[in-house]
Structures are given as structure tokens and as C-alpha cells.
Length: 269
Ligand SMILES: C[S@@+](CC[C@H](N)C(=O)[O-])C[C@H]1O[C@@H](n2cnc3c(N)ncnc32)[C@H](O)[C@@H]1O
Image (tube, rainbow, N blue to C red; front, side):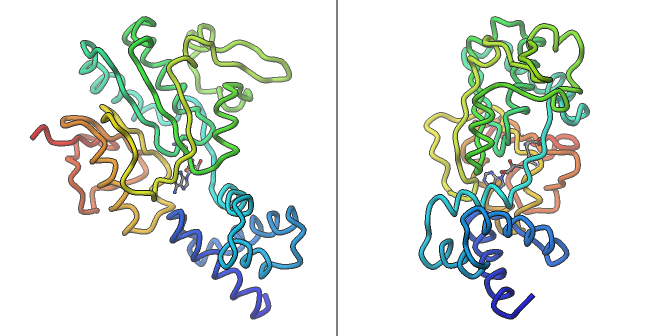
């Protein structure tokens, strides 16, 4: 790498960290370089320096979106992490049986697999009629994944973990190894592009449950703490935060009370 390329790389890496909270440590330099080179070629820029210029010095919105989506890892699938989902079904959902409105946020939802999984689990646990009083919002910083989520169509590999009886009810073949989520599941799910680093969050009504899985580990410690605080602010008293089993937020100073592995609760008073 030339000195000029190194400087450009570092400008882009720092921009990703300060603007999006996406933190690339030194040992992931080759991965980020590979991803940035793809964006540079797509925009026919001569080198990384030109890309950095159109991102940092003279920002072009399309370039910003392309870099964000190239740098973020969107891996996700239906019914990911059965241990956590089991706690959601058995320990959290029963508390919402009598609520007139169920409001859930999947922060960093990628292509929406988590959002539709939650809707299917609600239909199974509380009955399909519960979907009528349920709103599940999925947000992500990357525009292409939000567009894909809105289609409600998924490849076979994304739905492999869906139990057979649930698959039969809510997924129908849509040609060429693709499956479409049924309308009754989709109707309670909405998707928006949103940067988790834009505090405070713009919601008028609080959520009872927020899923924030497999994203915090891209953030540095300060952003993790700020994000946990901001989610806390938009969760109702006594509401829940669900993280991934592999992400421990217990070592971070945060107002969340630890309930079980991957499950946290906001104090009631
Ligand atoms: C690995 S996926 C996790 C998807 C899903 N929550 C799950 O656990 O399967 C991480 C997602 O976080 C999104 N992301 C990264 N930084 C973000 C930010 N600052 N704001 C919102 N979403 C972000 C990425 O675009 C990506 O889709």
C-alpha cells in the first residue's frame, strides 16, 4: 500500500467509525480494503483517495450509502439463536398477552429475517389474531437490505432453521429456490433506514421489546454505551432488550438490568 492509499484508507475507516459506529480493527484491514475497492471500481474512481474525497471532503450521498452498505456485514437468517428466541417466547411474550398494542423494534434488522421471525413467533404463541395489534419495526443503516426486507422474499438458505410446521403456514414457494412471507405476517412489519448512531431516536411511542442483536460488536465502547442508553430511552418502563448470546453488554455501564444471557430489562420505576 502506498502512503497516499494508506492515508485515504484511514480517512475512510475513521469516517465509518465516527459516522456509523462501524469499527474496523487493524486485523480486519484487508477485508475493509477489499470492500472499499469494490465501491471505488463501481464509481470508476481512479483510487481510494478519490473515494475518500467524495466521502469525507465533498460527500456524495450515493457514495456514502455504497460505502456504508459495503462495510456492514449483513449476515442473518430466520430463527437465529434458538436459545434467545426461546426466552423471548417463554419469558417475555406471556407478559404481553393482555396488551392492546404490542410494539417491537428490531434495531439493525438487515434483510428483515429477525422481524419476520418475531411476527411468526407471536402468531404461534399468542394466536394469529394477535398480529392485528402488533407492530414490528425493522431498521438498518443499509438501504439495499431494507429494500430486500420490504420484498418479503427469501432464499432457501435463509429459512432453513424455520420449523416445518411454521414454514408450511407462513412461507410459500416463489420460484427458483425463493420463498415469500405470507401477507398476514408482513402486514404488521414495517422497515425504515436508520442509523443507530443518530441519537436521540425519533420515536413518539415507546417499545415494549427491542431486539438489538449482532451489531453492537461493530461499535467501539463509547458508541455501545450511547446506543444502549438511547434504546433505553425509547423502551417503556419494565420493557426488554434482547441481544445476541455472543454479545455481553454486562461489562458496560448501562441502566439495563441483566435478566438472563442476552435478556435485559428496564426498571419499572
Ligand atoms: C449481522 S447483521 C444483524 C442482523 C440481525 N439483527 C441478526 O442478528 O441476525 C448487522 C446489521 O447491522 C447493520 N448496522 C451496522 N451499523 C449500523 C448502524 N450504525 N445503524 C444501524 N444499523 C447498522 C448492518 O447494516 C447489518 O445489516
